Length: 358
Image (cartoon, rainbow, N blue to C red; front, side):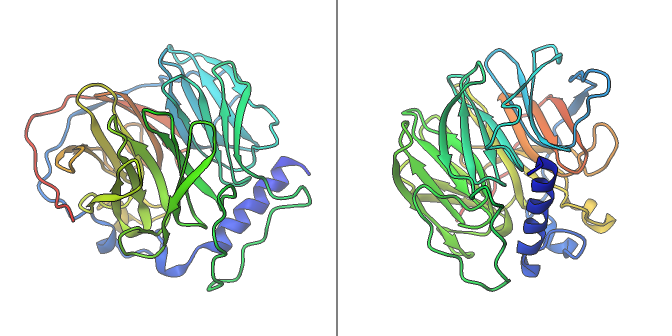
């Protein structure tokens, strides 16, 4: 089957599976979208113009994921007329496509790069997490694509979600690792859980069901880990970040920074957590004035500041779907509705304000 037809099938499945009570689009209540945090200092942010250089007649589609490696290379996972994984060098020059025509590519979600510079693609359409080595060869597969006769149809609204299985995902969203190499997958739109595997892909445990209580999720959309092995889960539909230790025991909840569409954690001896209260897909102007900002936080949830506003112009933010923050004061964002990738240089201030923890 042609990949464009697969793409359309997955889009239809996505639309059918959206529950009205969790809508974040045109029908969303703007008052519910505004972050709770008040009087947050603005962090000066400067756009790096045109830092990625596409060849003539090559374009991004929905720029769904972005990540960098230790050399400064940039990887963009993209939903266009087909699903593609771009690689650019540190100057922004296009180098190649990785996994071109790969059976595991159908409907991109995010891309991540681990500490060994391996590249991980999370594909929501094939229910797979795919690990490539730096040369672009497939090293590991987690999950399994539905049978080749087609993608599984979405059940009618209200249908109970089947019990999750250790090695089968239901529209996974992201991946992270701890220092020991253990793998954490946010899974996702269907299963509402976080799954832990060892470095060889052996299942260890999972936590989470659908709901709004601690240990429950409403679209765990993004995930990141710190140097101590704590795991930060962007519980987007519940408008909070749940923080777990490496054994997936809940340690904290941060609920002051809106709906976390994307989270990332900086490396180095003093780590920071970034979270995007993104402008919801296809939202109206009422939502745009209360969303769009990206928060910078200490790992304990203390808010350092924020930057960005919703908009379509260069330097403004549409729907930020993934962020990379390999450098402390440099944030790169992939925008699903803007069909673009932007990079910002930050000049942080020292003033802070506290975020409530539960």
